[in-house]
Length: 452
Image 1 (cartoon, helix red, strand yellow):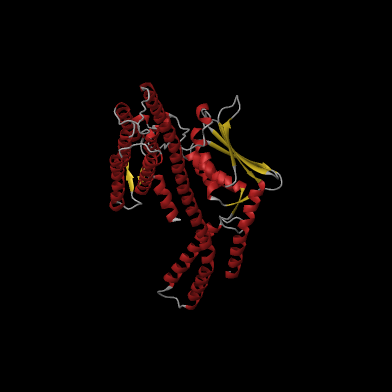
Image 2 (tube, helix red, strand yellow):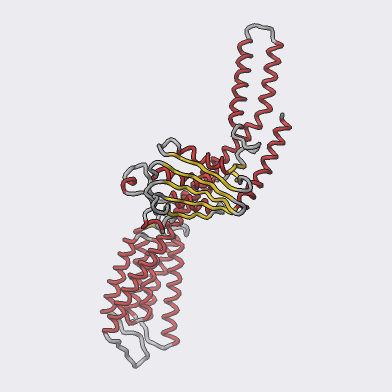
């Protein structure tokens, strides 16, 4: 569990960077493609090319790759400025090849888009903008100054200048559109990845706390028999020892044993029908969720009703955290009252949390549940303790949906005001989880009976 938490934390705090292996592999691919294109045009088509100069430019890329391979481990990540410099070199190297082979008249000028797309997906927007400016500067230069476009011997081709200008404009528009599009898509992916990493951290913490609860309950059952033995021995010693200097020690021993047994009784008093911390009725589930929020000046009213008996649920950290977060948000925004209602029948169980606050703002209602969408207004965000990252509801919704629930969000119908969040599970989901909890509970009850 610790390793999983560390991994999630690493992903949550990861910087934008590129692996050396990625850059090296892409550059080798470019070297191979450029070499094949030059040889194909020269040998297959018979066009004259300044092969020596072209292959000298390609050799520089190969030499750089070899230097990177020996300078850095392949798993090394290169951040910001260094990665930008490497991509900038690729732009200049491509511009040099195009300068020798026709400039913007060469159809391979479209490859200018590749470094910008790589930067847009992995590097900050400012770096991508600078790389795009370098591309346009190189494109402008080779559009005006370049060697002739290779063509058949004895023939020459000169494309109209207006056509070259059109290529320049098309390249500029493609850089802007594709750069913004790639950045937007990658940014959404990064946000979702970081939000899921935060969800994993929260879930790992809740599972750890739940495991501690289970260990405490198990310890209470396991320690019952040795404490009973100690109490019996202390009682026999008190009877056997002649009254004297040891009377106070024996009395203290019996008092401490009694104190330990009282502590264990408090732990086992949380036991539900002999199954400590395993199976919870819906009513107990709601009470546990609501209890931490009762002292904030808001009335919390729990209502539960249904048919075919009250559902039971295996103690689930995901459900406890998810519903707890929804109740906490409702208490934060409520004016005076929050209603937590559970209703069930043979097909489903629904838990609704309704407050009498201002409700969800229309502009965020459709996006609520996405990462980094906050329901807190500016006046709340001004507080240093308010948080406001917009991850709380995303984490709660993700954890509840992982448990098999469907979460629906909305506002109370007019003339009422306030937010309403409904969480719905299929009824068989509760019944099956409760059945799974009975096995370990019966085993512990049997072991406790043998110990007694």
